[in-house]
Each structure stands twice: as C-alpha cells, then as structure tokens.
Amino acid sequence: MNVRYARKGLASLAITSVALLAVGCGAEEKPKADKPAVATSSSQQTQAGQEPRSTEAPTEVVAVTKGQKGLELAINSVERDAGGFLTIKGQLKNTSSTATIVPSRLSGDETEVVKHGNSLGGATLVDSVGKKRYYVLRDTDGRPLTTSGLSSVGADLSIPVFLQFPAPPATTTDVSFQLPTFEPATLKLS
Image: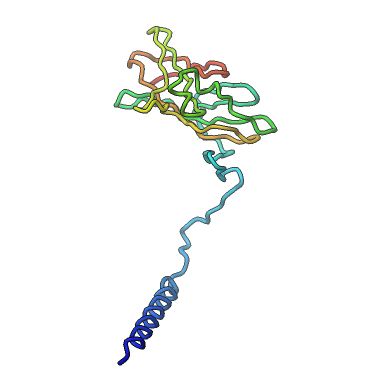
C-alpha cells in the first residue's frame, strides 16, 4: 500500500468523523421550554468602557440626592458587614432629556484616586456625633473601592453604582453621605 493513499484515507476519515460529530451533536435535543428568552433592550446594551445601563430602579430607596445637569443618586441599600466595612449600593440616574457627562469632580481631589479615572472616589461619610469623616476605601494600588470608569449617562437612564467605606462604630446610627457636586443626604445605619 502506498503511503500517499494511506494519508488521504486517514484525512478523509478524520474529516468525515468531524462532520458526523458536528451534525450529530444536539440534533435530537429540543430547546428547553423552561428557559426564558433572552431579550436585550437598547438601554441594557453596553458601550465601550461603560457599565450596563438600566431604566429599572430597585424598589427600595433609602435616600435620594441630586447633583448637577439632571444627575440624581438613589441609594438603595446601606449595609454593614462583619469585616468592618459599610457598602452603599444605588443607581446614578440622568433625569434630563439629553445625555449628561459625569463630572470628573466626583472622583475627588486626591491624586492617588484621580489617576485611576472617573469614579465616585470623592464620596465621604460624616459622623457628626463621633466627629469623624470616612473616605471611600482604596485597594493596594490606590484604586477606590467604588464604581469607576464613569463617563456619561444617557437621557432617562441609570447606572448601578456601589461605594465601600470603613464602617463607623456600631453606636453610630446616622451619617451624612456627601458626594462632590451633589447635595448631602442623611443615611440611617442599622
């Protein structure tokens, strides 16, 4: 037997096997009826460098603070954890009829935070009873532990955001949430 014909036979056998395998995979299966259809609305699509945007707001709103150019921050939860952290979650919404650029001032003035791009790193919590100010936590590279990469918010759209702070003492029940260019909001701590 000639080696050339043996190679051709092996190659055609491999191609036929792959073709049969591809045709045979899943041919008998039917789509599952219990899987929901995937729908993508234009408000949930992501743009380069943007987080998913949603027009749906979570049901519970703890506080709302208004900023410039139609921006509004609805705070949905304020949670202490056992590790000594306080996490705030919410929605940054554009209530205007045109897209709004997120102000770079929200990142604050600290060089270490600003060099990592637009974020909510300028936010603080003020404990007026304990006379302390708490800043957004940073990782070992100086990046703020908050939503970052913010550039703009489309008309009537919102972006989910989070911020993480060191937790005030358990005896502290109220803090003032402050974000540059936004009015302050009082948050109740449990």
